[in-house]
Amino acid sequence: MLRLSALFILLLAAVALLPSCKREERTFRVEPPYISGVDKIPVTTFYAGSAPTTKPLTSNEYEENAYALTEGKRLFTAMNCSGCHFNGGGGIGPPLMDDKWIYGSEPGQVFATILQGRPNGMPSYANKLPDYQAWQISAYVRSMSGLVSSAAAPSRSDHMTSRPPENSTKPESPKQGGHSPPSGQAPQ
Image (cartoon, rainbow, N blue to C red; front, side):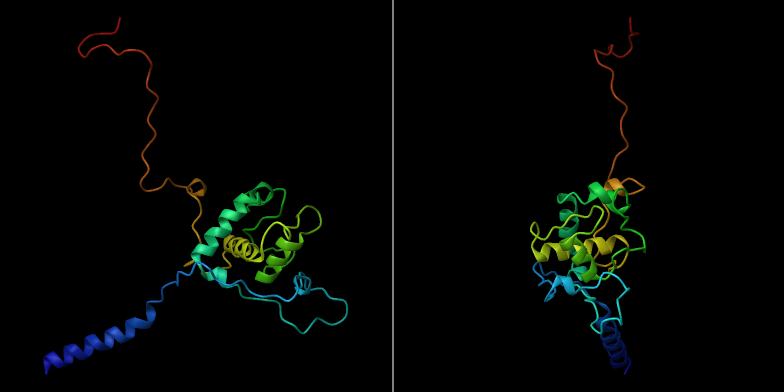
């Protein structure tokens, strides 16, 4: 009876723990969201007349995929986005790490900003990036301000952290040139 009771408890524990083990699916090619027209994505809450009844696109599957976020990070650097946004902290371009977004923080709004560009400096990347890469950058940009799951978000680069990596060694002082005297003899 004790053995049957222990087996039942073990089975019950396994059934209880099974749903809690959600792992990220490692697909390398997630289909980007489809939008019939980028010009139909609202970038502000101000409308002439009544607000449209269509809801903006609010999901981007790339935000749940670590590989896509890492690709977005790579493209962010390759397209020189850091040149204006200073790694997301703001500079010439607005900061991407805060909660104030001029043209909207929804995935479709960030996507539209990347492809269409914006007045006062944001260039259009419509003819420079395919849609899926714009979605990857959009996902990475949203990850900078914590708008995506931290389970999939890429970590910040080592040069951006406040403490050295665990495996790093302390820097050594520079060695003096020339020959050192043999041990036991004083320098001349």
